[in-house]
Image (cartoon, rainbow, N blue to C red; front, side, top):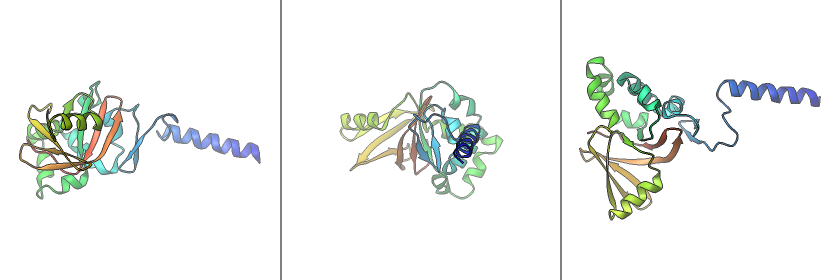
Length: 186
């Protein structure tokens, strides 16, 4: 009986590791969209497993940014959820992912990315230094404004829309993701 249990456990571990279920028992992951986000995987490798980010992943693929966001980085990504995309006017996402709108989609997506690995602690320090506000330049080239209220961190876009950081410090091998509840628009 004892030998059977050992074999069963070994087979289960082998099956899980083959499916990506075990990366490293020592690794501290964060659960996003029902899936663990492993620090040893890159931004794209983790994002594709989040059921809360299927729209973002589809948009990244349509914009041809998979290779870039799989690259060395480091990148800080403010990652809108499916619910954030659902707040956009009806038909917006479907229109943006059309091949003829690739440049516009790329601009919107790269507006969510900042060069460097900026943890939530780093962002809080910047806002404190700026007396409650701080500016970051996106890789798209336009500014994002960080601001705080109580214990909440927000990102304001060029149009004045505010996105709440709902999950911070999702560390990746090539940067960090901060999950947000609103799509940022340049």
